[in-house]
Length: 153
Image (cartoon, rainbow, N blue to C red; front, side, top):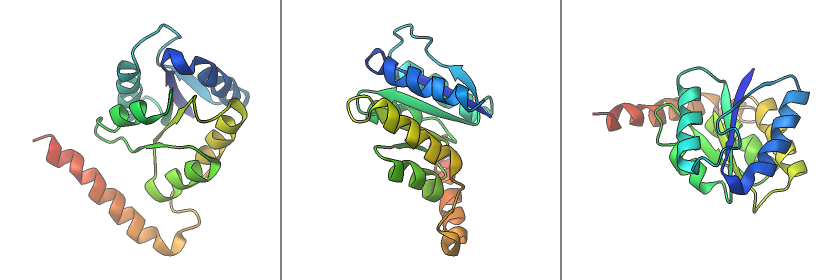
């Protein structure tokens, strides 16, 4: 599995903790910013494009609140990014929305919680816990994805 990680300078420490956590789990990590003070909007766009192009299985992006990274990542066709603030929201981001990108804020979560959130997101399957709604969720994902086609015109 390959995961892209990226942060603005405000969230480098959180990114570092999560990157080390991923590597300890034998997950290949692609660093979208290399700690080089790249603006959050460029980091998010690059990371989301890597996921959309199939170069990575997902991305985890960090900034002050997670909102800025989330806004930019969702502008890339094929991306379903969710800003998460808890283990519960990370798990549901995958189970309900099939999120291929999660974002989080260094002003909101600490290192330990961020790693727990990442594990919840990675370990959850789409529609897990919502098996009775799996057809609805799959149809909803297709409908939301079709918006990408409509906005490219």
